[in-house]
Image (cartoon, rainbow, N blue to C red; front, side, top):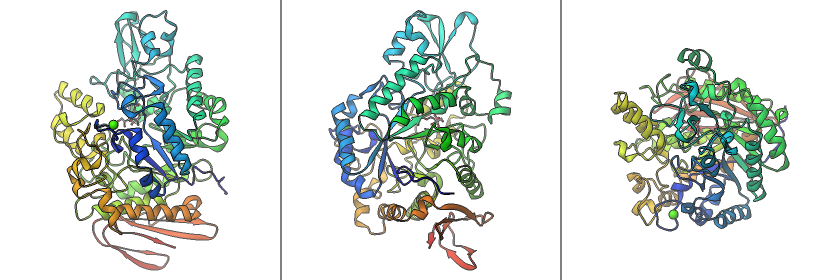
Length: 543
Ligand code: TEU
Ligand code: CA
């Protein structure tokens, strides 16, 4: 079936974490002017879109995902003038900009919430979700970034609890209230009118709540929602109604692509979001791939074997098949919520780092679905592996640590797990050079720079023909020049092979075969009657 051609299907999206990309003024924090100063580098990658994490006004309890003004820029990142400049300079270079949009919650410092928390009679009270204390304790909800794990926070002035799926500083917006939706749609128009080309919708699947507030027992959670609050939160009764309304009111009026962060969504639900006939979102990114290897019921704990390739094949093939005929997916192996791609999915030891990073980049750029590459992964940057809780800045790591120590849990084990899976691993400064602070800042960086910048850095990789960086550029070019890698069908080969992931991409009579050896030893296989031997972490594309 011919899939409709769209720019965002042909895009390679480069994710920039502004806080850690490039600091222009020596305060140790990356900023918009820093990004503008490195546009030649971004152009040199060949990517045609950039997704930038939030730079809106924010107290910063969750690095900008707690927004206090959607229409203002956090001064440490620059000004609205800098923002306009970035959009213009990207557009001049034919690169589109995807902005991060957080519509599930605001900061508790947002003007709406400051009004709301004052009194039950305030018109903004109903912008948020509340549980009146005279009814007793609210039914349990999980707060992902809450030390006590609680999703309700008591507020004295109103004698009621407000709902927060994330930190207490991130109260959830009440989408039941049409006025809230109208305000958010207006805000989206503000950014789209400014020329933004895409929206990455943060935690969008959580916006609808069952406001009858049913009790969710651990048993119910287990039976109906895989024991995962994310799945319960993504099952709100009016979710699709809201997404359709937002599409009709705003998205459909612009040439914009909308990408759902689809936490808690299963492959059999994918088309509900991105089916072309649905008119909701254009693409989504799921969490099943990045959760491979997690021990069920544990927090980001990975078993000793790390992951099994057969599970990997099953997950990516199932998601591909779910979107084969209609709709469109994405592929990613790292982002600001995940550890470094090469540390989690490859082998970041000196011997195999480069080969396994190239292998993973080959996977990203030869799969069906729009690839997202997280800044630094094109260099094969690795996890920093902090040893002490004090080294961490991330609210998720800190609160979870607090939670465990309060309960007398295994804090040491937790810190060990975080070295592999913690979010700060990917938030360390971009490694431009082997020099002081990796060339990221002339000041004191907000988070520690990885000491291995002496070995892994952009400057060095520019000079080496076979570097991970230059390999990435070549792969991007290959994808851009060959429609078979974009629109071609995907088919899994050798499903039982324990070490080689093999698949074909077929388009207009052409068939390309991709062979990826996910092990550190030589492996053989037979494809198309031909015997092929692959070295450790070797990636091969046969035309
Ligand atoms: O993430 C939402 C999300 O569902 C997961 O990242 C989840 O919070 C996490 O893996 C739990 O372990 C988005 C942003 O990407 C993230 O950076 C923010 O912290 C979060 O929303 C809150 O806005
Ligand atoms: Ca700065």
